[in-house]
Image (cartoon, rainbow, N blue to C red; front, side, top):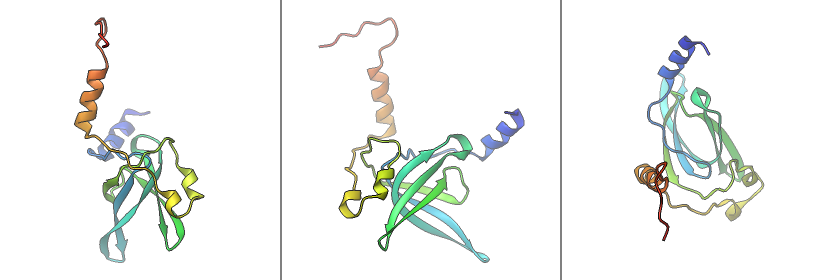
Length: 139
């Protein structure tokens, strides 16, 4: 890609993104414009899909409202998305949770996964990978 395009796109990327994963229950705060006024609205649901990379990275949130399933796609780097709060981490064994569309009631619940902080995850990964050329003693 042209270097000017890459430079422009990199200025539009958000610096701090939450580590949202498929299966998480999130609350997305979205800025909505109604006439001359602006307000914030929360949208709470389960992340069923994460797609693309870079500035086009999106995530799809599904919720059930008055017995009808509603899905909404958000851009990670959109200026309209104020913040994303992770309420629960769900245990998902698939990349896309489309099967939740067919389920009703308690069948849509995902098991909760205990999440480590990012610092703890990084330190665990560094410890588990031995340096090249060193012997690792397993007991």
